[in-house]
Length: 284
Length: 330
Image (cartoon, rainbow over all chains, first blue to last red; front, side, top):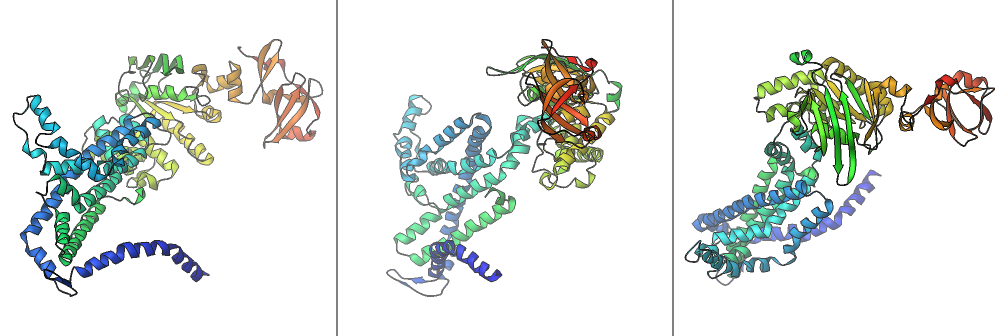
C-alpha cells in the first residue's frame, strides 16, 4: 500500500525531474567535466588536470574582472533597490484604487515588451558625444564641452543595468507590500510612529522577503551578464561574463568552463549568504 | 496612571456636529454626543450605519469633514492619533507580525525613543495586566485569537490613553471565547477607570457591556441612553426592531412597541394564527399572524407553553396589559 503510493509519488515528480536533469544537471555536469580538460591553440582534449584553474587563480586579470563584476552588481543593486522600493511603495500605499494600481503596474512593464538589446542600444544615441544628453546640457549652458563619461563607461553600463533590471526589483517588492495589512500602518500611527518610523520599523521589515527575492534576481542577472557590459562600454570594460565569452570566441572551452564554474560557485555563495539573512520561503 | 484617577470627569469625550462625507456619500451626519468619562459606551448599529467611521474619526484615522471632537474640552480633531489621548484596538488586532509580543506592546515607547530597559519593564507591566506574561517572547502568529486580543489591548493601553476605542473587538472570536473576553474587557475597564468606546453590531454584546448604548442608523444617532433605557423604552421603530425582543404593531393610527415576553396566549385577545414555533430552552418563541397581516412574536415561558402546546396553523388569542404598550416616535 505505502510502497505503491511512493512509486506513484515518484512517477508524478518524474517529468519535472527529467527536465531538470536533462537541461540543468547534465549541462552543468558537462561544464564541470570540461573545466578539467586541456587545450592547445587548435584543439581540446579530455584530461583531468587543474591547469585551467591554476591559470585562472594565478592571473591578476581574474581578480580585477571579478572585482569589476561585484562592483557592477553592488552599484546596480543599490540603485535598483532604491528605485524599485520607491516605485513599489508608491504603487502599494499611495495609489488608492486597484484599477489605477493595475494600470500603473502595467505601465511599468511596457518597456519590457521590447528586447533587452533594443532598450540598451537606444541609450547610445542619447548618451553619445553629440547625443541628446550632451546637446541639451550644452544648450542649457551647464557644460561647455560634451561629457566624455556618459557613454562607453562604467556610468553607461550601470545606467543600462539599472534600466534593464529595476522591474525585477519592483515586482517582488510590490507583491510583498500588497500583502501588508493596511491596518498595521494605522496601528503604527496610533502608537505615535512618524511616517519615516513606520517605513523603517514596519514596512521595511515586512518587505524584506520581497527585497531579498529582487536582490537575488538582480545580482544573478548582473553577475551573469556579458552583452550589456560589451555594448554599453564599447568593449572597454570587462566582467566575468565577458571573460567567458572571449574564451569561447577563441575556442578555449576548457578555460571558459573553469571560469563559469568559479562564477557559478561565487553566485551560489552570494545567494547562500543572502538567504541566511531573510527567510523567503513564505513568499514562494 | 495615578494622576489619571484624580482627573476623572475632566476627560469627557464630546462630539459636536460631527460629519463625515466620502465623496457624496454621507457616512456620519452631524451627530452630537457627550461620552461621560470613565464609562463603557457601546456604539451600536447595523453595518454601514456610520459607527465605524465615527470611531475612526475619534481615533484620528479618518479626517473629520465637519464638526469637532472634544476631549477634556480641547478640540482634538486636527491632532495626530497619538497626540489625542486616545488609543485604538483594531478589529483584526493589527499586531506587527515581525515583532514578538513584548516588542509589539512596547512599540509606542520605542517610537518615543525610550531605552530598551524602560520599554521592556513597562511592557512587562502591561503584559501582567492582561495576563500574558508567559508569552512575551512569542510572535503573534504563535498566539490564539484571544491571546492576540490581549496583546493588542496591552499595546493600546501602554500609551495611557484617556479613551480606548475598540473596533468590533470580539467579532473575530468564537462564541465561547467572546463571552469570556467581554467579561474581561468589562473588568479591565472598571479597574482602569478610563472611557471605553466599543463598536459592535451585536445587541447582546452591547447590552452586556455598555453602561451607555448609542444606537446609530443611517449616519444618525437614533437613541442614546443606558442599556436598560434603550431596551425597555426604544424611541423609534428602528431601535425597537434592532434591539430585538420587541414587536412593532400598528395600533390606533400609530406604531407601538410591545415586548415579546409581555405577549400572553389567553382565552381572549387578538386572534392570530401560529406561523412558527421555536423551542429556545427557557422560552418558546411563537410567531403568529394577526388579521392585519403582521407577525407578532410571543416569548412564552416553556412550562406554560407545554401546559397547552400549540401547533402550526392553530388559532390563538394574543393578550397583553395595555400598560405594556410603548408608543414609538414615527
